[in-house]
Image (cartoon, rainbow over all chains, first blue to last red; front, top):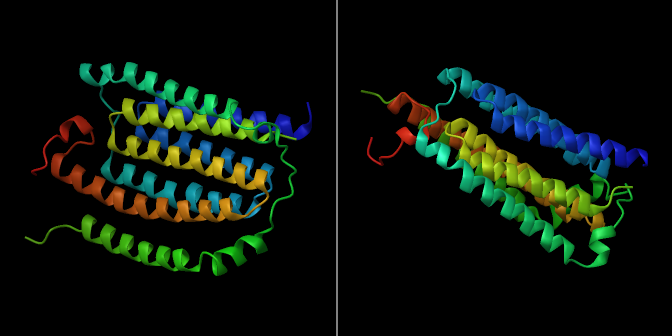
Length: 167
Length: 100
């Protein structure tokens, strides 16, 4: 087993363990911390793929900003452990079935895909950050400008939603 | 080196876990976190295919997905704060009326 393959399996195991822990934990703050583990190990996988810019953005935006927002809201609302009723326990069976069926469907699609996709070896040499930035500011310049508008609308929406009503 | 299919299988597993968490969990914030997990799984598939095809398009899409996820998290958590303030609960089973 080569070194990249070993690193991949370690990071993949950590990511799956974090995702399982998110489901097992009862308290939302424990789920949030295990989601951070998943995100950091995914950032490691991006580095392994050679996508260093995406890895940095993953750590800064996902692991940093978004998860801080989550933890902040959990602490603000003083969220306690979740409670399960009989009906919600029933959702576990069909939900598990659905998730397994979905995973099997994706695996079957992959098995029927051309040989080149299945055995394509990750060379570790990907388009550099310069290529990504030139693509953002040339081909995708209108979507890029639209995202700035989207973020502005999101800030306004969050402010309007979270403010206390004047009465 | 690692074949592309390994990454896709890992992405499928993480997406399935996210779907299961979304159906099984009863806390609004945890359900929201499972949506983030699904978005992360899709991002991994994007980067893996971008690497396999040798084109940066996939990585550009990932950046857009991350921006949309950040906007979604801000608005969604605002809505969750509003629900928690009106119902004094984060359990989705308590949120069964459109009227406040």
